[in-house]
Length: 278
Length: 272
Image 1 (spheres, rainbow over the protein chains, first blue to last red):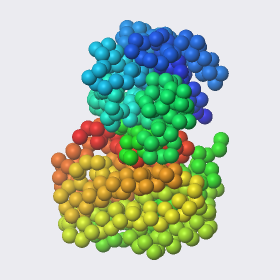
Image 2 (cartoon, rainbow over the protein chains, first blue to last red; image 1 turned 90 degrees about the vertical axis):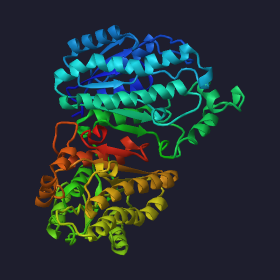
Image 3 (tube, each protein chain N blue to C red; image 1 turned 180 degrees about the vertical axis):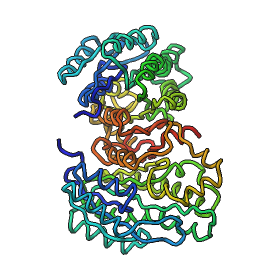
Image 4 (cartoon, rainbow over the protein chains, first blue to last red; image 1 turned 135 degrees about the vertical axis):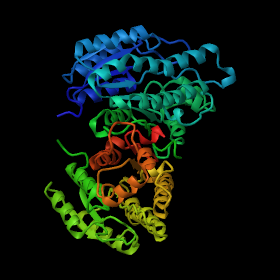
């Protein structure tokens, strides 16, 4: 028996990385999935974009678990598109219980004085406003279900400051305010709202030349190996690990989504190998 | 399906009843063996009935009914030597400890407060937690297998609540104090892959909260009762809700969670 039997979860940024991992982990526990992803390049974001092939792979992996998934190509900057995807998913799957607002970009690292207008507004539009739009589209369905759990993916950058990431840090702090307010507004409806705060996670968002350059500017590009850069990442954490796996975030999301956390709301939960307390 | 804690041993203080018993049962359900300690005696400044040897025996029988082993000892967390002896005897019987739950605590709240409440609640709720971690720490480090420690704090470990009596102030001070302990231990023990976190329950339906003295205390100050209301529409939560949070923190699902204060408080703290 799964811990989420009979539940339906809406996940943004579902094509790969943490979003795909959440879809698989929640499906393993019995949930059906409504997923969206932009599956397209985003200006200012320096890593190869998720593709429709990535999304198709997520669909295949969920269906291999004998769960249903309704996956739609949609951009969290477009409320109407997100709402249509959620509404159609609920029409197909019957209900909505869980929201994992996961979609996000890392953008281009730069000191704040060098960030462009586009760097800033694109970041806020996706990592902050996109979370609000995704949840806004889902709330009526959660209320109809009579209870629910919303999990927002923030970051250690939602609790701490990091140089060269003013736009990212601001957006990830912003969703904490959104989480706290939603937790109050939705408590009477037994809808819980929490955020998770990962340290570096071993996905494409950190394993790329841009982030490697940020962590090892003193090394020649060819010296910036996974191992060499991993040592730099490890210095951020208290536990002796460079990064955590996507499934570690999924397990936190699963806990918060399940009845085991039925009275946890308004909480910012670090999954950060001790980075914040260090 | 294999339990999440197969082959693990957990050391739990305050295990005779209430949250401690619930933790013992929940962890045993997932495959853990248990070293259980409890004072099983009254402390003079505590107005409600504290645990008894019969309570501890009931925890033993409930864990054994799950086909898990349990080594139970009557010991006071204020007495380092007695606590160390209980821990060592438990390890000798069940094997090395992977999980420590510093759960034992008192709430000396009363309408007729006495000055001694302050020292008693600090001794049990703060120094007792320190003693609990200290007796377990050397063998966990030496074992080299990592581990997980969870300290039971309170919403009073994050907020200035609890009233104005020596016992109430001491309770809040002690519950804040264990957060500092947790953070220091988390940093010191990280290199050994031993994780340390706190849980912060709102009111839990246990004998420490549901008793005539607490009732009298809350009724005497309706404003305080109101200030204790949760965001979610529930007056109290159940011991198993804290046990489930602890299970997440000590299991592999929480393998990279350390240094965290985790409220299990129906939105109480966020509402302040």
